[in-house]
Amino acid sequence: MRLTRVLQGLVWAWRVGRINRGHHLVLSIVSGTSLFLLLLSLTASPTPNLQRHGARHLAARRIQQQADDYTGSKITGNLDDAKLMSNDALATFQAGELLNHANLTNTGNRKTGIPFPDNTNPQDDQNPTGSHGPQKTDGAEAVLLNLPVLSQPVSSTRQRELALEIPRTISEKQQLVSAQERALAALQHGYRITEQQKTMLAHLSPHTRAALEKKSLKTRKEQDKAYIRHLRNKRQILPRKGGGEEIYSNPRMTVRFPVILKKLHPKEWEEQYAIYTNLTHHPWATSVECINYTITFYPPSSHSTRALASFPSSGNTWIRYLIEGATGIFTGSLYDDNSLTRKGLYGEGLKYDSGMTVAQKSHGYTTGDAMSLPHDQRLDKNHMAELSYQGIIVIRNPFKALISHRHLDVGGHTGYAPKAHFVGAGWASFVSLKIRLWQDFYLDWITRTKPDKIHITHYENLKTDPAGEMRKILAYLRIEPDEGRLSCLRKNTDGLFKRKPSKHVPLDSNPFTQELKDLVYEAIEKVNTALGQAGKEQLPLDRYEIYDPREAKVAKYLRKQRS
Image 1 (tube, rainbow, N blue to C red):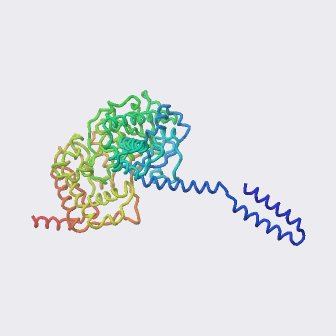
Image 2: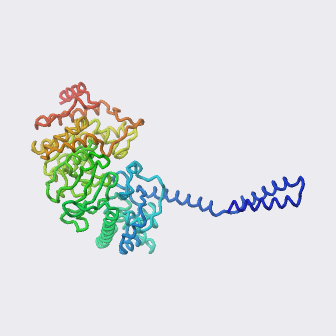
Image 3: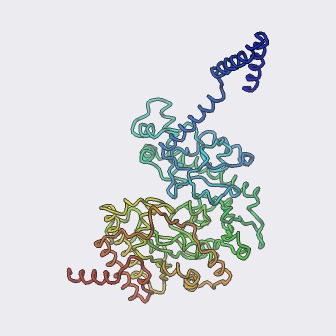
C-alpha cells in the first residue's frame, strides 16, 4: 500500500514538472515528492497502531500475571489433537471449570506446564517461565494439554476484597465462585495457594465444596482419557512382548503422570489408569550400548516400604537416579514433587506404600512444621514407622549439606542463594536449627532400628565410586548386580538436578564462624560415635571439606571443660 502511494506521488510530481518545463523541472519534482511524503506521514495507518496496541496488551498481560503470582510455563500443542476431547470435556472447560493460570504458584521448581513428548526439549528445564512470551491457547487445546485458560482473571487485589467481604451483587458472587473453583482445583492438582485463596475456600460450605471437588475430578478424568488417546496417536503406547501394552518413555519423551494416582492405592485405581503400571522408561536412550536397559515398576502391593532417607541437599535425587539405573526399578517418595515426575522419576507420582517402588524418599522431620517441635514430639514425624524401620540412609558432610540446603531454599534445585544469605543472624539461626535436626535425624535412624535393617551410604563415597557403592546397595536390597547396567551407570553418572558452578557464588566458600563450626563438630562427633557403636561404616572425615580435625579436638575439649 505504501509503495503504491509513493509511485502515485512521483507520477504526480513528474506531471507538475512537465507543466513548468525547463529549469523548474528538477525543483518541481523535489518539492512535489517532499509534499507527498509529508502528507503520507500525516495519514493514519491502522497497522502500526494495532501492533503497538498489541505490544502494550501483551506487556500488560505479563504484568497482571506477575501480580497474581503466576509462575507457569507457556506450552504449545497441536490444535488438531483437540479433536480427541469429548464434547462433555469441552463443554466443561468452556464453562470455566479449570484452573486460572494467573492464580497458581507451583510448589516445586516453579513449573506448571506439562509438555507433550514430541515437544519436550531438555533445555526447557532451564527456562521454566518460558522465553517466547504469552501464547494463545483455545479451550480445546488447553484441555488436551492440561492447561487452564486465562479467561477473565481476578486480580490479587480483587481476590483479597472478595475474600474479606460479603459479595453484594450477582457479578461479585460469580467472581467469588470462579475464584473459589480455581483455588480448589489448584489444591487438587498439587499447587500452593495464596492466603487469600485459603480465606475464600474457608467460606465454602461442605456441600458446595464437595460439589466443586466432584466437578473438578470429573474434568481431570476426561483429560486423562484424552491424554491416553494422544499417546496412542503418537505411538508411545506399544504392544508388550508378554501381552498387553506399555507406555514408552525416555528423557526426551517423558510422560505426564496422572496427579490423581498420588492419592490412591493401586487397588483403588480405575481401569483407565491400569496401563501406567506398565510404564517403561529408557534412561539411556541416546546410547547404543545402553538403549535396551529400562526402568519399570514392581507389580502393585508386591513389596514392603523401605526408606531412602537423608537430610535435605544430601544427594537424594541423584542417588535415586543411580539406584533406578542399577536396579531397573523406580523409586518412590513421601512427597509430591511433579518436577521430578516430569524428568522421569515416575515413582514420585505414586503413593509411598503402593508396593511398586524399590525405596521411598524421606527427609523426616527435617523439613515442614515438625522442625520447630521438641524432639519427643517430632519423633513420630521421622517416617520411620511408615517406612517399616528399614532402608538406605544417606549421609553427607553437614558443612556442605547446610550450604547446599541454603541454596535449595532460596534458589531451587539448580539456583543459588545470594551471598547475603550466608552471613549475619539469619544464617546463624539457620545453622543452629538445621545442624540439630541433622544430628537428631540420623541418630534416630541409627539407634532406633535394628542394624541389619538399615544400610549406611556416604555421599562422598558415592561421588568417588558410584558403581562400587551401588554394588553395596544391591547387596543390601538382595538384587543380583547386572554388570551391563553398572557399566552404563559408570558412563552416565550425572544426575537430573546438578547445580552448575557460579563465579558469583562459589560452592567452595566457607561461611561458618568458629561458633557455628563448634556446633557442627559436636553433631559430627555424636553421629560418628553412634555409627561405630552400631557396627556401621563411620563418617569419611578425611574427605570432608571445611572439617578441620585439630579444631574438632579443641572443640571437644572445650565442651568437656564446660560440662
